[in-house]
Image 1 (cartoon, rainbow, N blue to C red):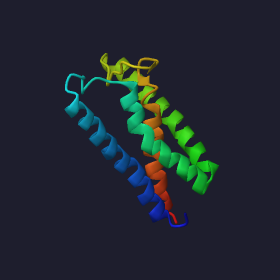
Image 2 (cartoon, one colour):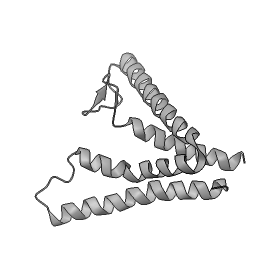
Image 3 (cartoon, rainbow, N blue to C red):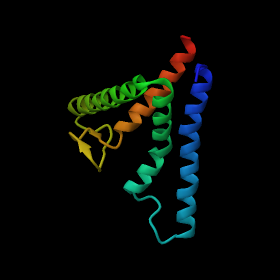
Length: 134
């Protein structure tokens, strides 16, 4: 695509629309099967929630080039590192944890599950930056 504003809008539809759609489907499932635990973490729910943002990443990697994927991967690493440093520093200063994760821990201060979210958030700002600096 050529217009940065259209690219941002399409990515926002992938992310926000996908999250709303998956929330609707997951909540509908628990409405019809109330014996299941609605607030319990499952890897399937997590993968469903990141499915559409990942689909948007794949689409824009194809449409705009491999630099989108590299930016995403770099942002994932940088976000996880920043989260770990903030959590570690806060814990050492106050003696309390700023947040706690219970699944797929990376050094007790971040989680492997939060890593893709940093990349998706960074892509939002990347698309906004393309609009501002175009």
